[in-house]
Image 1 (tube, rainbow, N blue to C red):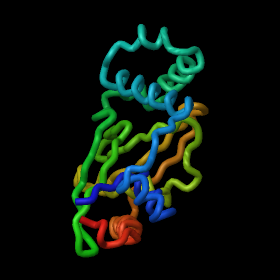
Image 2: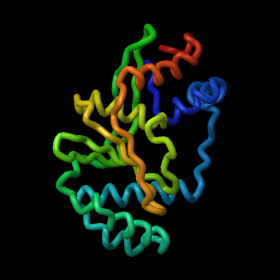
Image 3: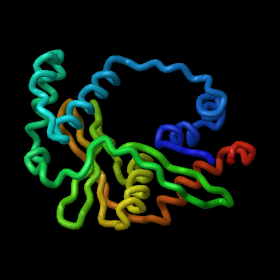
Image 4: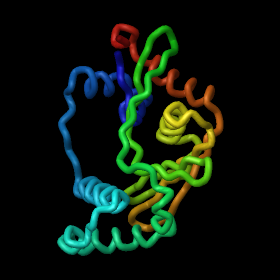
Length: 195
């Protein structure tokens, strides 16, 4: 059964050939830049912090630019309400059916907070936040999957730039529209690859 992440769906939406080369023929070679590595380290530190670990020693050994970014991020208002924190770096796998086949959607929520009856998914971005979070494919997939996991549509996703602390949000709007967008991308793949 096929499993799709946001990144694989983006590639499939842009180019079926590139999707087949990367995800079916495995012709992709990992080429991660320093900014991506920095983002991974900051994600990990935020997760440790939210999980209650004392990160002081690790933080003091970080490169100065990362330490300063982390200090600014952890000084944000959302981290003052840690009792609303549910989970950090939470992987998900949601089974879906449509178009005559089954498939999975997968990903990882950077952090999940619950404020009253509302779930807020936080997504840390190294630099830039999306200009149109309501139509961003990541928002669509994450909000759709979160609605299945938490069995509610009282959900939003909030993107936060770790570099400049800008933020952008999208609320859950249209389950049917979300699913149609996801399925429309998957159906670009030739049927022989849909298992």
